[in-house]
Length: 400
Image (cartoon, rainbow, N blue to C red; front, side, top):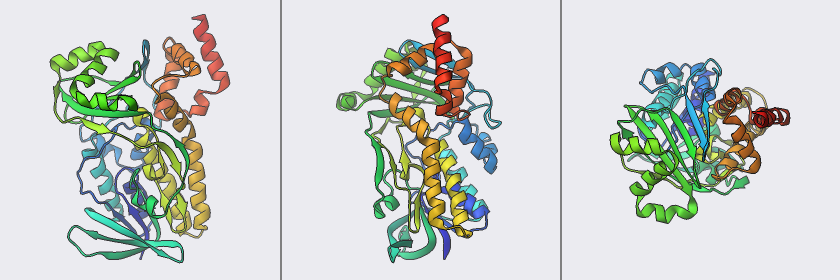
């Protein structure tokens, strides 16, 4: 009998398993994948996410893998360019965009080192229900027989197509349609910092990752998907030329594509019911948003820790339903501004209000630093977009 079974061992699952195991709970973490293995990802980790890794004793392990430090960011909308970087957040003065083949094994081994049992290559076939409550799982390792494992709580950390969420019929209570699709790949021969540049109904993201490679991603509206697929490489380069011509020149003259193009047709933005009798959801299983702002990994870390704290309370005497309800409420409150900003900007067309803010930021270095602090997690969206702050920013822009 386990205290907790965690289904999914990547950015949300391994941390919640690790943190529960560190508190003395008996934990089983299972995943269909074996590690190292790749998965579709933006790679990017904001300062607040790195601060969680640091607190867990895992950041030095990531830095030691040679992930390039990012200390300058450029965000643009058409001809408006915002450049700079946030001051240190939680003691972190850089960001990283590691390959998932590097990051995920660090998380998995962190769970193992904490005392969690981790089974790789494990398929969950069904949940066990008793008296309307989830009581465990039935699953098997590759080629093995199906066996039962029981626990006081089963946690689904298994992504947007979560087996656990589907099995318990977790309902969506907020849903915003996806606007775009993404293609990304890796190039050698380039030297760059972080770029997120939006043009006319299209976007390009550029940032360095492991092995002297640069991740280059482009985004377009969903109605362009079929046309884009007809000539992926040509369209990919054309977007670079349209938005950042100088980078496109470097890409075509010095860059060498080192992998195939990876498409991302992601689901809608959503919140779904994330707890019930004997179960909880964390990471993309319970809350998902467009990849444009790259918040997924940092959110997974932050809310895995929040869930681990509340599950620990539930395993230690507090009513579990009450503890899990508080987890969902706090997660929703803390993530709301990021969700709203993401769903707004992922339309690839700014509202008049946001356009005015971007125009003012482009000529105000101090305010731009605050903007990057919001992106990095040192300031909430509510704080950055507070009426008095925006009035001051727009007033300064008008007088510049």
